[in-house]
Length: 199
Length: 263
Image 1 (tube, rainbow over the protein chains, first blue to last red):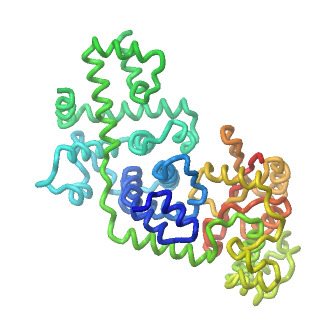
Image 2 (cartoon, one colour):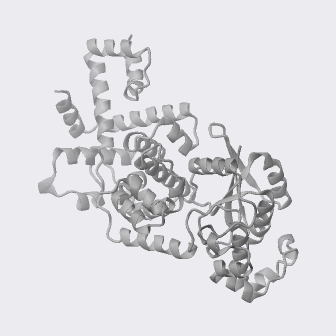
Image 3 (cartoon, chains in turn red, blue):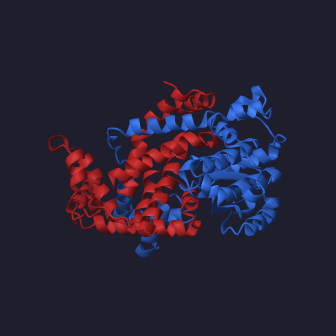
């Protein structure tokens, strides 16, 4: 199987199938990232498509010093940030955003599509719980936590994307983590997972 | 060290940002079960975020992006590696031609517009040809050499390598604003001239300087007719066209950013 770099080189030599192969490899990651950022599947689909078109247009600017996945994270985060900014300006609200209860009930959309009761593992439940917790945070805190923890972007990269100083990025990450922990501290399920982890 | 200090350092420790304090931090954890639990819990929660699963890709997304990419390919008919100065002229012609074809009256009504008042009168058939078959049209005019078809040819001198490199680097680091339709790159020494030109055109612009990357970005919105004038001015200044991100006919207003770089 060709590596990402090999596919990018093939694309730069005019092989468009190589670009499609590269995207097929990453489309689930791109879509998931957009969904976690935007909390809405339709928006995630639209922005995922935007990200892919951006990649097509800007792949020639990719520098191979960093892994392609890192660069992809950077572009996805940028696109989601732009979308959230626009949404904030236009005040678009979606019904499926009002989903949370205090102890981690998933929204119906996620529950019906992503959970198969007979096959649910502890790991999956834990991930669902975290997803709900993330969705309770403000857009500002959710996106910075996703950039840092899910996309593993550096402070510098986050500062550049959000156009903030490094100090502001650090303090915002700190506050976002505190918010997340405060929410999870109310979840009996979460406390049980943490007890298991500590034993 | 007290627990309050330790709790404050947990985030730094997780991000491996503790320096000389690390020893004291670890020492405290070894004797304080509460702080140790807080540290382990935080680490566990954050690690779980890292392991959030990939979602199932919705039916139809793959077809959507494949169609979108196909449209991109069709609209370009050239390599995405188009950074030559010659593209300015093609873009300028295409923008004017499309505007005219879409609404000839709109252009006639702009007779008081500086950009169009001074623009050469073009036969609509020639403009149409320029839009539909840009490469052929330019070839007929002897502007593009056949062997240059990969990059639409060179109408001005080849850009100097330092500028090209600086622009490429800045472009790679530039913020990817969704709304930007066109990105140019220019030497920073021409910033004053550019700002003066934009003021003459009565264009409001934003100016963002990135000290780390030694890049200044000018962003503004303009009409197609203003774009025509800008395009011509930029050719004269020897700028590079880095990317055109949206088909011109889709927009009444064009959002432009210009990266100013040090060679």
